Length: 164
Image 1 (tube, rainbow, N blue to C red):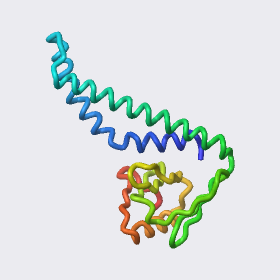
Image 2 (spheres, helix red, strand yellow):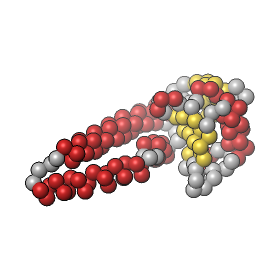
Image 3 (cartoon, rainbow, N blue to C red):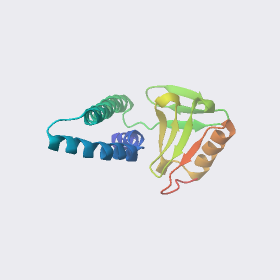
Image 4 (cartoon, rainbow, N blue to C red):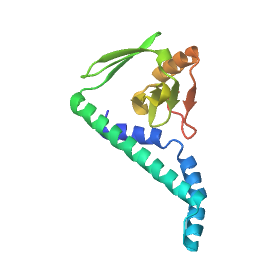
């Protein structure tokens, strides 16, 4: 796990609905420009500017906290590989920092892209992140079977299938 991979993975999760942000900004900008040409911001424009400011602040704080967390984890982990063990009941992750075993039902969704395989936790609590290039088709199918058996949604990339 590299700093670049973990940051890239987080950015992809953070901006997975980037098109909604773009639509919102596109709807706000004409109102703000029109109001500025008239000399004062109206109620809709003020709301739009505040909403965009809150959104930017939310993303900036999320990015800052995640980068700090990634850097702290990498400084403790070093270059030692993270080991994953998958069995019928659970997934076990072992690193320099510790070891944890999670039952398949602990996850809310499996997201497979050409970049990463994410086993996402409920309520936006993060994800178990695997580089897609390091997940064999056999392991990917096994993970998909476990998620299907638990009735947990599987979301695949529309661009390029990632091994399964």
